[in-house]
Length: 83
Image (cartoon, rainbow, N blue to C red; front, side, top):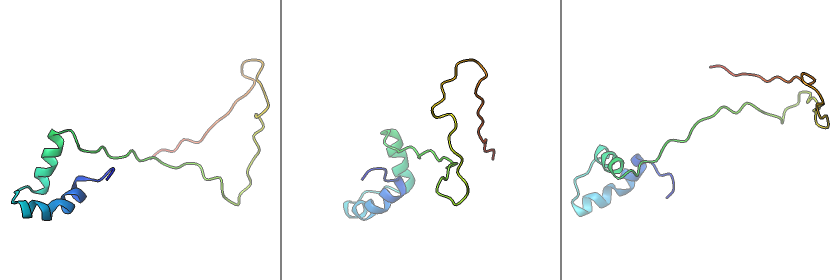
C-alpha cells in the first residue's frame, strides 16, 4: 500500500501482533521503521494561487506573439502571497 502512514499501518497490523505474541506498540513501530529507513516523508503542502474558472474578466496575453528586441521593452509582474 503506497504512502501508508505508521499509525494506519499499526492499526492494520495490531491484531496480527497480538496473534503472534509480538509486544510492539505504536511508538515502537515508529522506532523500528525509522531504524530501517522506511518512514515516509510527508508531502509538501502548497498554496494554489491560480483559479482561472471564475466569472470575472480574463485579460488576454498581450505578449504571446511578441519577441522582445531590446532591453526593458517588456515588464511583467506577479502577485506575492505572504502568510
